[in-house]
Image 1 (cartoon, rainbow, N blue to C red):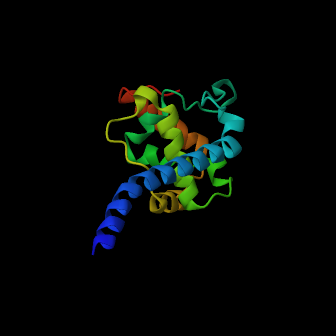
Image 2: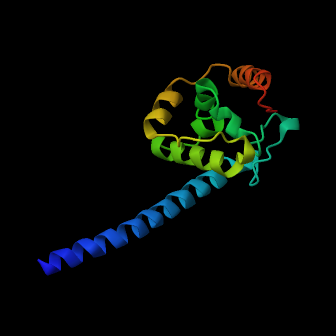
Length: 148
């Protein structure tokens, strides 16, 4: 009985540490996926190249969490769709980049992307991505959420 009690106490103490290690590994993998599949266009700093039509993430990507259609759009961009990532990793890298680059644009209560969302959103990709992006920019800007 005493051994079981000691085991349960040790497991309770170790569980948060293991969860933190997992979270750190998952974040590191998502960051690596961003560097490999996104930073070539959007930059390591998330600044993009707006003058070349490559949107920036820095300071504004959080606004895309304010409407369901703009949240979905982040999972429907050509770079992510063409990266060859599975739904779980696509959700993780998108969650990572939103947390990393949103700054003050991130709404309170941000919910990480799920694997199921990634699957559903990626299946419903827009035919005209640039047209859809411009439409969402117009809606967000009109609602007082500045994106460029």
